[in-house]
Amino acid sequence: MKLLENKTALITGAARGIGRSIAIEFAKQGADVAFTDLTYDDNCKSLEKELSKIGVKGKAYPSDASSFNDAEKLIEEVLNDFGKLDILINNAGIERDKLLMRMTEEDWDLVMKVNLKSVFNLTKAIQRTMLKQRSGSIINMASVVGMNGNIGQSNYSASKAGIIGFTKSIAKELGSRNIRCNAIAPGFIETEMTAKLPEEVKAGWINAIPLRRAGKTEDVAKIAVFLASDLSDYLTGQIISICGGMNI
Image 1 (cartoon, rainbow, N blue to C red):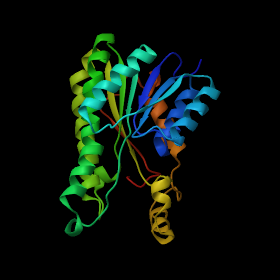
Image 2: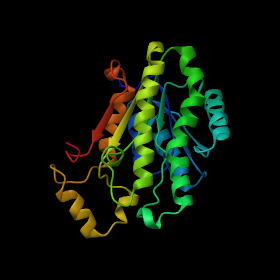
Image 3: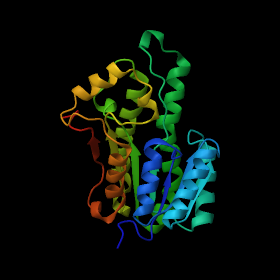
């Protein structure tokens, strides 16, 4: 039996990058997958087709995770279309990296709104459903820089640190109803965003990683499968750092 057979997952910001890999890996493990992006574009269409080829139900929803109203509407639509929701992956996020002296108020507010408020929005919106069914797995995407900080990423680091605190609090609030909440803290992962970095910067990051390679989005997806499945049914409030040993 596949690890996520008969489960339905919602993944925010999944049209590309880590979210897309999670969607595909979930589908391979038998889950039906609802996913979001800001707009319904070619990336969404291609992922829908890929999920269909795997043999599961997959549907994209244009939605702004940073909007409380959009989150409420999204959960209602997904429940109408899929009938249930067992797993929530709060993956939507952005970067606006700058030294503090050059960072604008807009840079700060936007990162907090998209990265941190979105986690509140979706968790709040899905809470009632999971409480009624007395089960659920909520997985939040944090980062090693939310644990250690990083030059030029004070806004991003603060938002991810906030996600870690939120994860631990929700695990304590909802644990008695068999709802688990954990976070994944990726290190240096090969994505469209990291591909834009200068080669010397990427080489410096990799040299600092004990396993001497950047992570792949599939590496993160495997951890998400574990946290979403019954293999981790006694695991909650934990932050799993997938970083090749960077965060030892």
